[in-house]
Length: 277
Image (cartoon, rainbow, N blue to C red; front, side, top):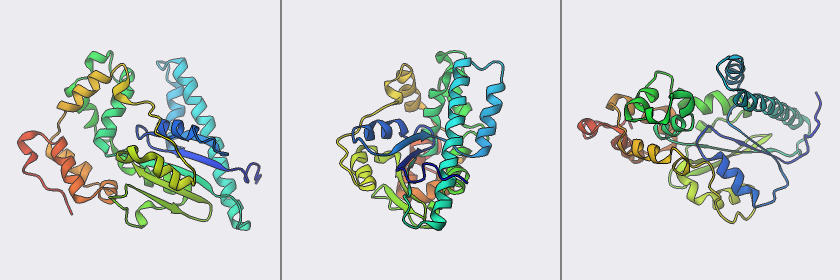
């Protein structure tokens, strides 16, 4: 196997959608890092297969297909780099490790943000993106499953790091993991205000300030998004399913999860539910 490029410093901004990856990239652009930087959301072959099927769909716009094709090319290149670093780590202990940044966000908030980011694919016009239609989209059986399973479906198979193997520091809001060929920063979306300190700790550099990008409330649909977010509520059983999921119980404290239950649960049931310890 070719190890071309195996000595370069490579930074992977490998995050589930709507968790601040563009902000991380823009913020780090101030630092003039020596790394080759890749930003993407998925590497798994299952997602690549879905993307390839989407390209073949006749109703998909050509401009969108071109973006998907570019993502597939990047996915192939990044998987090659990861394989090279894995092989390198077996015979060259001093080789450079991949540096990887990822994040997470509570599923309902992430899901709603994604609905509006992709509203042109989901609704005939923005006016149809209302409380009822957004609730319907988010309550589809598999709508939020990729959020809950992202670390097991994407990160662990690709990097060999199990983020669930050790407790997460809730108050700190981020943690650094490491194996023989990769260093990984995992931060919570709610920690964005502290991003310069978090990134500086991980990359051992000074990060001046947060450069916010791709923020939902600043987009053309921002007003509608904020209005729906303020009113949207769900049945208690649905909210409990999200807040008692593996990812939420690991990365959010019991108090934080209870607050999210109250935030997203229909008023009539909000005071009658309790999360699992």
